[in-house]
Length: 324
View 1 (cartoon, helix red, strand yellow):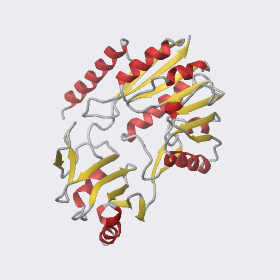
View 2 (cartoon, rainbow, N blue to C red):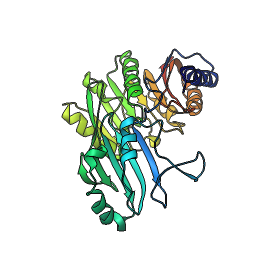
View 3 (cartoon, helix red, strand yellow):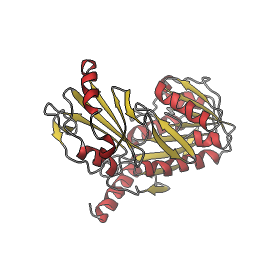
């Protein structure tokens, strides 16, 4: 796309968020890459053995030869894949910005058949750094290694990480700045994933508690903390069931799924933390949750937009709620 089109897209996102929140944004962060930025891509495999997307809001498969938003190294693998073995239904491509880890999904009865074929591939030439079948390690690297603010994360094949590596660096920097402004004694990281936001704070000496429902992500967070000599408390815990008293903290970070954190905001407010630092991929649910937290004695002091998903209508919002 032309530069003015990219600027126009970002302006549209800015206006949409400002209209929903009825306030101006304090900052808008554009993506350093407007194309070829996605570090995680999941493609279906049709009956002909071709990689496909589904059309939006349908189950209609559309074959693809390349993906304009996938990182170059992922497209290299896509374009050099030999004939995909029969029975493979989905392939996930996970990049660290240079190397690509591939995860194939197939029925249990086809695992040995698929493994025999892929072991014969020239996977180095194809740019495959590591390969899993049904999350069972087959060859090469076992982890996707990404460094964020001095923390080297080692992500397993089922652990979530942000698709836009460059924007994530900026987002983590801003989250860290917002939290540190309150000089917290203890920080709760709710919907923590593998500690993307909170491990840099642990590195600065903050007491950190992570709540995350994915055991893989929690295990990866613990392993990263151990490698860096950090003391954290990481709990395998469904954050949607959080109740006041489950943890003690004076600042909370939360990064829920698109559905938001309805009901959770009130529980968080009961213990009166000084601030809530809320990362959202859905401005609509963020606006709803804002009303809930403001009914409980907080006000929105800052809100920023991060263009995590160029060429789409989606964006990431960072808001800071402060106790009145």
